[in-house]
Image (tube, rainbow, N blue to C red; front, side, top):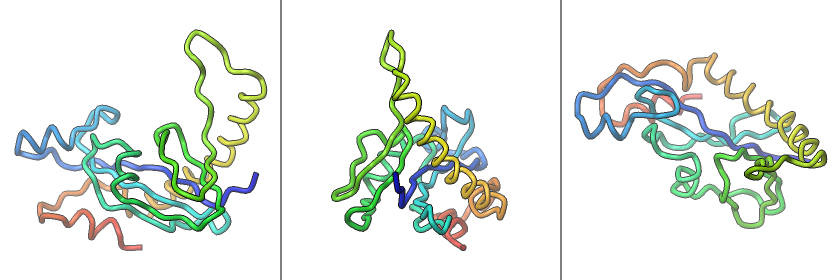
Length: 157
């Protein structure tokens, strides 16, 4: 299985907004805090971030970000994704995704082995995202109050 790209999302905490509607929009139930979110597309061979999405509110789902961004991929490439992108199928791209356990059943040994292979490939994206956060590109709490400055700060790399 030759994987060309991996897609994943990352969240970073922000200061709690003062406006109540903005608070609801930015609150991420997953992180239990106010966050903003970006999606990254990573080239596996070179282990480089090839695309960083616009910044979205923390409660917006990863797949919805991809649908709104309308990312394009070279025809015939392989895209590895996690279950957060279920239903995201770009044209002319082969996608790999771990299998979910069926309700009240167990995964077969073949499915478990396939999930292990996919997760060993997907760990690379987590290492690249950790490197991005280590360089403080999309990690620190954003403390500025200038409108749309979160996109400017997140894209410098």
